Image (tube, rainbow, N blue to C red; front, side, top):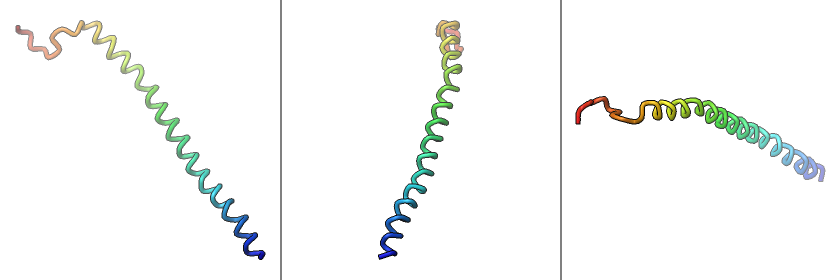
Length: 65
């Protein structure tokens, strides 16, 4: 009887503790992914500005018709 009570207490506690690690990893992964996407924004804007400034003419540099 005491063993059943002990198992009922220990198993849920072990599950909660093990799942907390998964939650932390998921949150950290999401934060890193969001940080990377935010870091990409200036490069995307810079590329768009460059494309507008160069007018997109003759990108391959061949120079002939």
